[in-house]
Length: 454
Ligand SMILES: Nc1ncnc2c1ncn2[C@@H]1O[C@H](COP(=O)(O)OP(=O)(O)OP(=O)(O)O)[C@@H](O)[C@H]1O
Image (tube, helix red, strand yellow):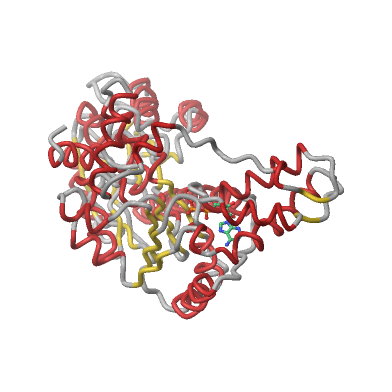
């Protein structure tokens, strides 16, 4: 059990010295100050857990109003701070007023040593319990949103997917970090869930973070958490996703989007098994299994300096590469049949099967959006068709535009160059939008523009 840090405010120096000696063994730190004017800076720094606050400061004034004023100030600055009020005047009315305003307890001067120690220790314990409840509530709401997500089975008819599932089952039992790569919609998150489901952490939470959906300014707080007041919008303490995943699995999707300046902080967190929230200097221990995914080429990003090599080595102890759907034809019909059943049921349709020619049409398409695109194609066909059997004309594919045809010519590098120029042009030279559209970081986009002289 942590002992906590106590801040004592009283304008009587001999009281401060006496209390410092009395309480030094009960707390990790006892800091004494003679003027409440120092309070805001100390409270905002977030170092202390509770305050013992004198009610009267200016000589001759003993209405307790100053104490009430500072109590409110402390609560504004840190709503989770517990304040014990301290006064020489046994004024019950004032005590009630202070407790009504949110004071945790009240001690009268001259004080009884044992009572002083017990009161402060109990208030600290109460504060710790409140903190734990808050963390549990956050964890519970994260758990609930995870549980409410749609659950799908993995369909694996192709030899490639069967091999991947075998590997997943073997690796799942260990705590090895896993990197899953593959194009958009190939099933990376589904594989991550399978890893978690078969791991010894299966009864704990898997926290998923879509790094492609977080704005650059929020990355650090989202992952590591922050202390209240550590930046302008930090109105409350916030637990980061890494800490939320404690005991379970942390799934970092689109890991290639992690800004380069935050990569050392993630590396330190993985190596030291602890996270340090923004505005704090206290590392919090965490026990997580890390699974990362990306559709970007991390080796290339290491070469162009937008991804740290040491971080790549840390996250890819085991590497699982999911092939695009067009390279595993056996899965196309099996997955199509699987989604057909799901959507017929959902939309109460009587479509029992896909015709042979329909299946052929599905097999011969390139599926640039992989399983996700197949899923949507089947859903759309089920909604629009009134037939018992789905035929080729029920399946609509994305039209291939002439500009796309032009891009798909030449070497991979030439195609990449053409694609980047096109996207920059389409975005009106807005590089952030272009990078987002291409699914790469701004840094990678700059590097590629330099490489291709764009
Ligand atoms: N083998 C499979 N069997 C059944 N459903 C699948 C399979 N693979 C993918 N899916 C489904 O396809 C959709 C996309 O899968 P998922 O989100 O796991 O892909 P992803 O590679 O993580 O995508 P992104 O790259 O966009 O993050 C999901 O609805 C998922 O359930």
